[in-house]
Length: 410
Image (tube, rainbow, N blue to C red; front, side, top):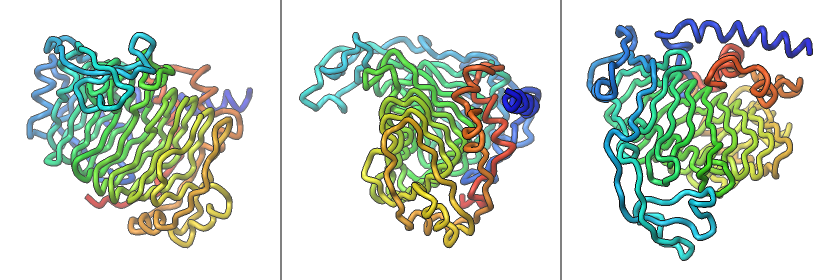
């Protein structure tokens, strides 16, 4: 009890700067997003309505855009009715999703149907270069539309924003954030819930980014796996993607948490907490390079799926010390409890690839918290003090942890 009290006191102190600094970015971009400054010193301002938000996001002016309320696009463009399908074994009336269009409708278990969905969802908001998109307190919500960051845009920060309610019952109904070849993006302290397709997707061309301190909230009444867990979490499919996934909270998900599939992609996946996922977490595929270290998985049905690719997932103490000859430090072993089998994947090509980037000694506190029975599975239930639960725990981690990579390459 004493340890819990001390930790919560520390968490409260760590959280204060984040809440008080409502109109400035908290912390600095790191990992593969190191050096990203967003809108920089531009005067922070809140759009008056969704039309102004759309305009400000897309223009070429450096901006700090405050999301100080719910910008709700649901219903603003009407509805669309078209062809689609659903799985015969996972009916929308029984907690499943349907599929817009015909792309996913070729299997023998897919039943054709007519689908009506919100028109705004599949057409995201374009984001131009040098933008900071900053939620104010717990008020910053974008509903009904996601963001698209094209290859022509760079130097973008998205912090403290909740993306939600994008056609949650309809696959292909919209993604929350789509990265399409953008170099230099930091997505931090954001929350994702009730998204029809991917919470985050990278595709078409190589992007370079860090996703940190985010919550991927999977509880839903419309699941592609009919188990109240969201399936389409994160797909990294850009050829040559460079990414850091650090200190994120992934829970009540059933797949792609995350999926690394872009040929030549290099992924640094550290310090994440994955809990109560009734499906699979990691997917890594041939032609990709992933270092998976210092993560905690608790209550995950299938920790790993896919064909593995060049993956180093630090399954034991020997593989931990073997990192030193490549990275100049040991790699923390992943902690797996009440979960399925964690495979032994020790392809050193992943370490050799990451060796190309500067590194610094990491301090991994997550597993220390876990060993004291103070990990977020307990803290999230007892000590919530703000709407976006990830702020409470992950702002503390931000002060205690250091990334592996320290040099930008964009």
